[in-house]
Length: 256
Image 1 (tube, rainbow, N blue to C red):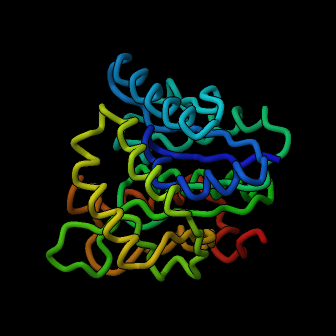
Image 2: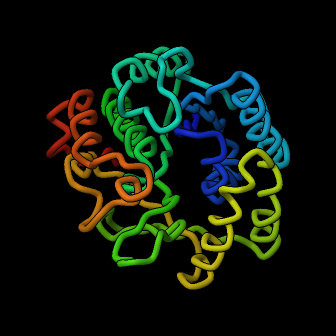
Image 3: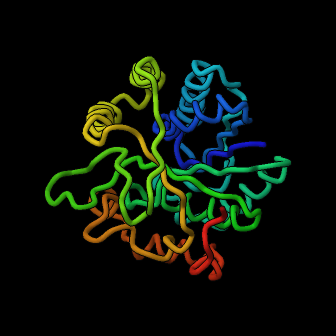
């Protein structure tokens, strides 16, 4: 049985560490597939190398991580513009995996258009296989007013939260493993403090099951982080999602 992570960017897996540890403890195979492309071969190779260093530090095979949508033109920030090609690329890759019992994604939360696009891609693939999806929050600005964002804060619109416990040693390991991502140092300089402060305030880490019907709903009221920061409208993402997502998912229950 395998857990497949369908992620937009190399480093998104950092926020999924408790799920990775849980699957490792259960002896499950873990496969990490990345959708967004980085401009410049050197940067793409560097970022994948950073992921593989992170996995190696956790005792996982570095070869379990790879780009799954190379050549689709889905550059960082533009996955929603290339959804059909990305979907077919992911289908071909998943066809090589015999048994998938779980898919993990960055949450449908309005944080980054690539994250929400990948959530829709994963939901379509999961529906074809009858596979459940769990989602972890990366960042959003639900209910924040003038504040810029909050990191790793599950939003109530996504349903009940399943809590994962970590030992003090695991919390420390997680905090220190941010060093695996030198090419993204400027991003983590802002995210890392908010992330761990949030864990302290919320007393831990939680994940949520993805209800496919959520893909046809605005992630939350108010302006979304990607609307404010990246200038991508919810309408553009919603149209791209609708183009690749079977209408039956509007009312279909999440796989148990």
